[in-house]
Image (cartoon, one colour):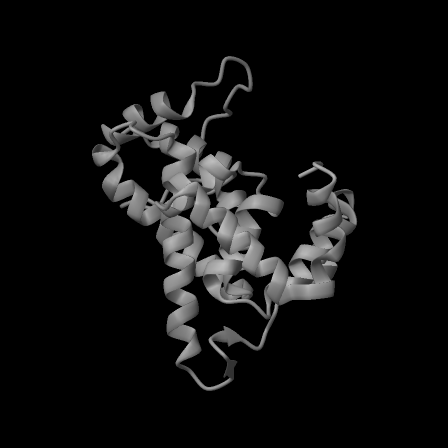
Length: 212
C-alpha cells in the first residue's frame, strides 16, 4: 500500500530532506494512551509512532471489508486524517485500538455502500474480491479460507469475520468496536458461517473444537 503519514502539514517520509523523522528507539516505547496525549498537543513524532503502529492494521482491515486496494488505501489516509483532528476528543473510556478499529470499520463500510451504487458492483459487494494470493503464508489455510469467503457476504457479516478470525479480536472487543452486544456479534458470525457454507467449513471445525 502507498499510504503516507498524514497530518495538517503532512509528516515527511523517512529519508526526505524536510521534516526528516528521528530514529525511534524500540525500547521503552510509550503506550498508545501516552502517545495520544502527546499527539493531541502537537507532538508530531508521537503521531508518527501511532501511524507506524496502526497503519498496517487499518489498511488490512479496510482491504478485507471493501475488497479493493485503492479504496483501502484511501480509507487508511482518511482514518488518520480524522484521528489527527479528533485526538483531543479521545477520553480513554475504551482502548485506542478499539477506537481506531471503530473508525476504520465505519469508513470501510461507508465506502463499500457508496461503491455498491456504482456500475460494476454485485449485490452491494464490489466485483473485485480480496486477493487470496496476497495472504501471508504463515497465516495458513485458515486466513485464506476466510478471505475467500468474504466476497459473497454483506458488509456487516464480512466485518464480523474479519475482526474475529483475521484480526483476532475477542467477542467483547468486537462488540466494543461495533457498538453492539456480544450476542449480536455471535449472531453475525453464525449467519456468516451459514451463508458461506463449505467455504468456511474448516473454520467451523476449529470453532467446534474450541480452537477459535
